[in-house]
Length: 300
Ligand code: GLU
Image (tube, rainbow, N blue to C red; front, side, top):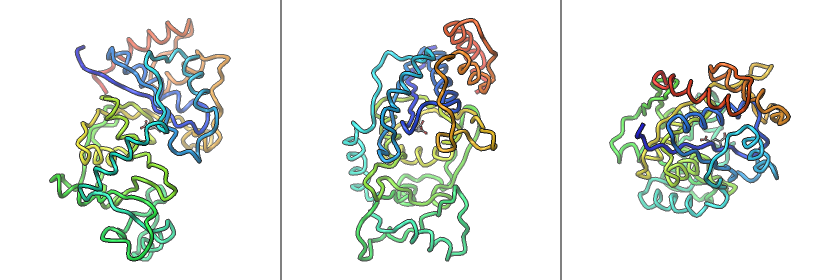
């Protein structure tokens, strides 16, 4: 095919893989294989308070049992924090990152007093209180000055991008999200910064992941531009809904994948991706789905 392809699956070890995360794992693996590309595994364990001891090893075991294997060694974000430090320093040097002393409660109070309702995932758009100085407060978190980046790089206020499955997407990051956090008040690196730095450092060209992350993409593209990184292509895969109609997640009690029958679990994941069942063997199934993925490519 001649396309340089580096893909990845980047689970947070907050629990074992479940039926929902297997869909993203399978899709990213198939996409890499169909492109004759590389597939990396990255354990996103920077948010230590949310990580569960041993979940990383469990996830690696589950992927291996499903035949979703890679030749490259997995990486752990917790071992790469010097890279995030470096990226934050670059943004500070450019004048695009600033310390913030606001608590969540203060941010919400300002937001509500401006007549807004907490809408997007119940999160307030940061009102910019510390953008021009801490006003005597002590620094807690670091934020990106979104407007400064947009102006300096002559970007349109509404960022548009194409998702291989969902089509044209857009978000006005300054008004819909605001100056988002790069390093949290508890010292933890924000997912947005870590994921962008790692994808660039590892040369990731194609991102395939669950649709729950769609809303983060505009922020990540903005950060890529601010850090002068290339923007990969994106495909967001369908979510698996639990009985309550909500996204299946570790938080709402999704069951860990049953390793006694990986083929059955894979068939369920393949079904979510619109692939036909294959009951004969793991390797037949993965071959059949790679072929099917390849021929359906154009439609993504
Ligand atoms: N670690 C994130 C998660 O498990 C995924 C990050 C990504 O794929 O960009 O939800």
